[in-house]
Image (cartoon, rainbow, N blue to C red; front, side, top):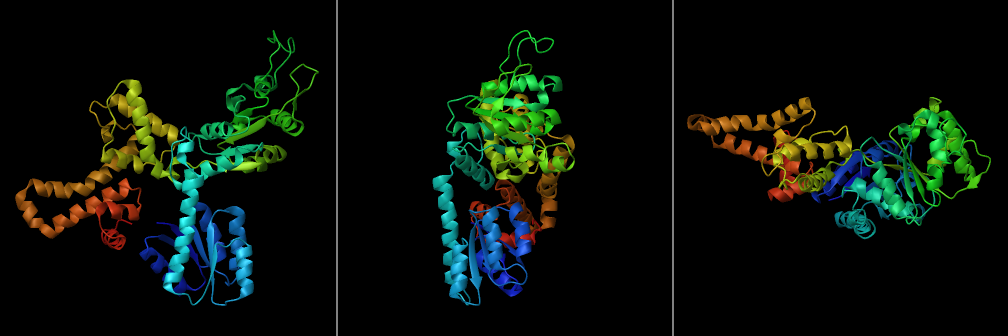
Length: 460
């Protein structure tokens, strides 16, 4: 199954391609013009874009160019009713995966789309592997993109700015970049900017000489000196004061440091990886962060997605933390109940992976059986009660009917079977993180049948 975006100004063509490709098992979104398509792409992990060339406003060629600027690995198939060798040459020159002229036959479009998705799968299998990054747990499309970016930027000396909410694992990504860099044998020095008092920041970063201030009883090399020839990881970079920002800018520009109270300048070779949970562009507009420093740091920007955007990784993370804390706490818990996992899959994790780890650690500590149950999950209590209530409410009427034979007869076999079917589909969709293709496979029914039943029971 692939995620496909169809872009065409003709509604009939959008609907035709959507129906055709969904019958092949793909998930299909549509856009009536290039502007709408560009707005959709950042928030979706599309595998393929199928776009008309000639559209009002932004042309398909212009859309292709913008896609290749922002998402160079995204395969784009161009279609047009005005067959022209010039169009074909221009499309392929600008990076189109293929070019199809209308009217095309069904087998042709199926074949080209299959080739494009197969190419992407091959890239993921051969070039991106989660096993190469055992310290980072994840196999979702979002994390595979992170692994690919790490592999591409690690060998270069370019500075990196990692964006991400607290608890997403920004330091793990930074360590992976260092691990696969050409200076992996040198030091990786993590520096949490918010943890160092303002009056000591300059000394901690750049060092000081004996007697330079009260308490300076001996020379101190500083963290940047320790990271020389290696990597300095500046976490929470947005917390630096304006004065330290200015001094850091000089370090990045001149590659030299001068200790507090000292006169001798030392040349250093250092790679800086910075991380922040703030939007530094907003901080620049507010006058709290230097624009020139931002551009020095963000040579390569990298965003680590929050856990709510990669829910498919939750079961993997849960199993990892279960093994880790069962061993650490001397418990024999290696499994989580389906209802407990359902609660987690419906939770937004404001604290991200760090919060999930704490939840599982507490669950292992509190659980007296050999399986994690919903009652052992210490979530936000209001959210937990709401989720458990939603799950159990779906079963209540059927359980009550089954407990009373007369009521069961009153309901009738069709109602009972429908309730069972609805419960099973709901449970399977939760288990597969709402992947209808995977759910259909587990339920041993066709994708089309599952879509019908989802609509029938109002489970969209």
